[in-house]
Length: 425
Image 1 (cartoon, rainbow, N blue to C red):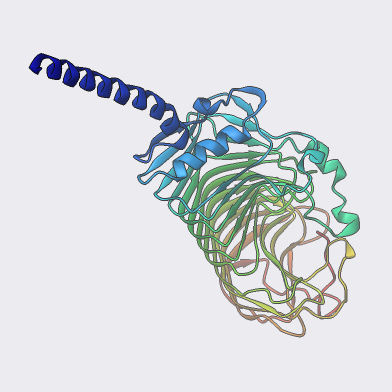
Image 2: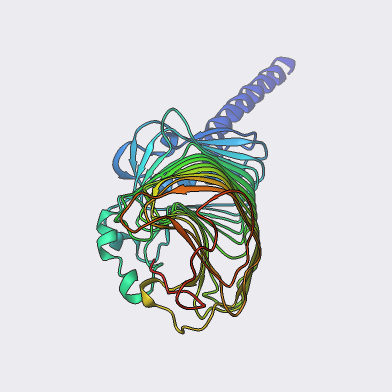
């Protein structure tokens, strides 16, 4: 009886051991599919992604989903190589800090028809403590936008948001985006909306001058954003600043070609939130349409912007080095020619030097309905050697305070109308 009992016990133990091994073998691939709750790396190639023509959108989304579900810090890895991708939306919130390392080049379909109902190549939304970075010389996102630019009818219709952006960063907090290259976007390259405490560092953006509405980085309704160390060349603004922006720092940016760094245009829509605190410093503009610019629409809705400061700026053959323009009317799409209702105050232009592409190097044209308040001009040295005559400064509805060396002397010429002539894009 004892021998029989021992045999039965041994058989039960062996059966239990085999059962546990089988259970482990079954559970392992399931765990791999569900992600590692202990964190770690989530390489898209383990989800089926391969360099080449195969769309990797689903593989990247799956890797992101598993990494985002991790209870400890995790990393999504995109290895070196060129990958075809239609569109991804990397959605938060995530359970822990998350990093995306991009060693490869991501290629969007050239045909904009592929993006029916899709507004971005890459959207990252609702994430806190995100690090999104290019590694090993990668981090390139190529929108292949040449076909789309030919179909952009913004100049005729005024509808300028019908094509996909390369990036939409929505509602991010305490995050860093670095070493990323955005190339040939079909429309805006990067849109930063509703974000808090986000740094964009060592960013490269490139698109030809003829690519319509390919703004480099657009910021709106965001607070505590820093752009540091960017090289931007586009067919529109290198950096554009929309309503609701607060405490924005833009520094060490090289802009060209493009339309410069612009606050606005403001006042086109009802209920725009105030812009408060824009600090642009140590930036260089080369062969651009504008340098630093503030613009609001003729016949605008009520809005406001204050604490706008531009310092230590270098311009090289820039058509309009310094522009404050409250008669903005691109493509003559103004609904009325009434004075702008945007209130501008506490503005400074300091230590701006270089060469202008036009004689009117310093333009301060404010609204006759709401003249600009507390505008400071300090240490301006802008040279012009063209055929238009000596360099000058145009002013309307503003009485700037001035200090230091001033060339041209502010307000050496007055425009023909109090509200200023409407300007093109």
